[in-house]
Length: 189
Figure (cartoon, rainbow, N blue to C red):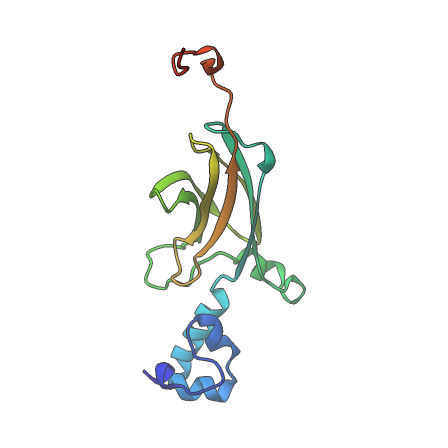
């Protein structure tokens, strides 16, 4: 409630907003004992800040029903110069003190067509600092322009899922049938 009532320059809507507050403002808003504030700090420092880039391979040559290959790169935003090897090795470990064993982040890479509610590709990966993954799916059966969606979803944290529009132009594919020889649609005089 205090975060909702906060009247600073920007509203507090995410973990990253908490991190950007001055210490005294954050302490006043959260009003937690030191041990609980330390837990909040651990959680905030573990919360993933991930940049995602993608590229459809041979995007100009996609034809109906043919396989499409897309390269997706996930990269955790960190300052490696300020981290030692131990800290880097702990990247991707989830702050989940009640979980019965060590939990590592998983990321779901999903490609779909939200207009038709169709799932085209699904892949689960782990991420420490950088991960490149190849995603394959079949182009739609009908030629035309499509607006597919790439979802990158964390299996461990709320609020860090990302989605991107994938414009895809699908050309007419090669057909086994030779429709040019079909004269049944031609009227004769």
